[in-house]
Image (cartoon, rainbow, N blue to C red):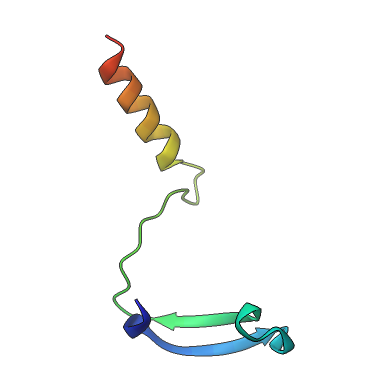
Length: 56
C-alpha cells in the first residue's frame, strides 16, 4: 500500500508526528468502499443477503 502513496501534504497538527492530519495523493490503490455517498452500507447489505440466504 505504501508504494501507492505518491506524496503527502501536511494539513494540520504537525507536532503530532504520525498522528498529524495529511492529504495523501495516491495512484492505483486498491480500496473497498463500505459506505458510499448515497448512504449504502456494504456491511448491512452483506449481512442482510447472508441472513436471507440462510433463513429460508
